[in-house]
Length: 110
Image 1 (tube, helix red, strand yellow):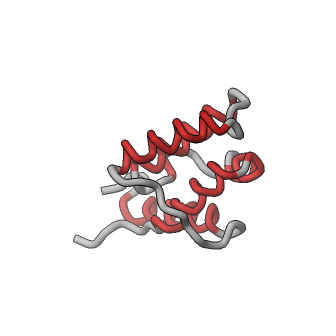
Image 2 (cartoon, rainbow, N blue to C red):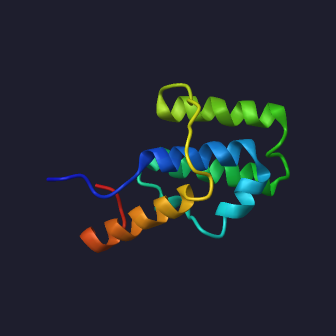
């Protein structure tokens, strides 16, 4: 059985941008939901970043450190710097969700 459509690099880039920039959170928040991420841990990180942002704490160094520690705990490895196209990464994630929906009917990961 083949893997459902996904682009983990695009997901990681979106999350990295959100952690580094409140403007990135504003840009992707209307476009993505936690369930759009193929990897469940990415959805959890997305929700954590949104929660910090909603409390006005996204830019606080201590909160960022806490978020990164949670990323490390969830992924089992330290977060790595990601490179990519800031303008296209959210669109790539959305396109992969659409392909998963088309292939299995609900967008859920296997």
